[in-house]
Image (cartoon, rainbow, N blue to C red; front, side, top):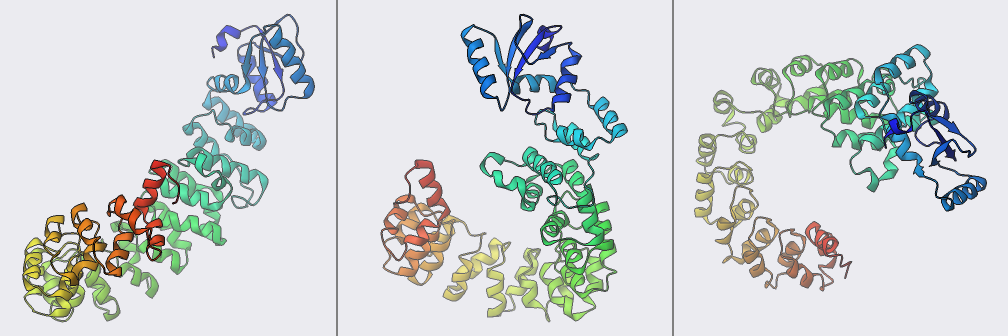
Length: 448
């Protein structure tokens, strides 16, 4: 809509404005010297259809339609008017006036851009209350969620719940947005004074969000309880700054969480290794170096076998110990080397192979060599990396455990799933299978 073409002219507004308050609407029209009238006369060049038209307004609209008057809806006009806003001027005006009602109106305006919205939000006063504790806070919080929540049209209810902010933080990869939410008064109050359960969930999400700054996390750690600090200690990766601060904690809960952190630096790992209660966690999770491995390989071999940072040479050394318990744990290690896999297959130990089959390092080609052994079929039927051909072969099994595993496997061909759901034993498993549900939605078939 070209507002310049309406300059020095008059419009007729039937009904009310939507995104702008009446006063703001008049001010912005004044920039173009556009007069807004409530009754039609010969000077009116455009009729605006607003919201909440009275019966009288509706009759007037119908009459003017019949006479061929020119019409436009309020949304189009307001959107154009908002494009003429000068954010700096508005911000200065709001700072000087501290007009919270006008600020609230701007924050609920869908036609201002995100950058301007975030600037305006820093001026809002929450009156020492939480996000949904009063009507004004509720409306502003809903505007924040509505603006940034992905696919909000599919889940409007989240606008009016703290879970909406939690979900929003989970979705976003916008660092300035994370920082801004963290700086809001209800969050800052909750950090220092404690919070209700709903706000606590937001703090927990901030504690784990990869874009939350160390500055905020350090501030949280000054006031937070053990549970929240422990959550921060579980962040991966955990920055050196936070590790240095956390390692000095005297709280067992915090140190326990820190001992399970795979990004913990070796120098701090060595500090925790001095205490036996943290030793197993460290050796399960820390990025191993040769020194740690050699020192603990005899006494903590079972823990080391599960460590995802095991080098191939370390795996080989553990495998050479010829321990069934160690081998079982190695077989489930998701970073198991192909050399060890080959040796385990050569062992032909069914118990070991049933564990090995679920290892993500095995290719579909490697899995196919197990089809001749019925004792391995249940494990095979669970594996999503099995080829369609292999799963089809398994579908002819008379073993209900194999068929149930196929019903749950999202890689099972859809035609096999259709067959399985005809059997009451497997119907529920098929209907809960994500791949089957997606197929039904895509084909618009509905449940059979």
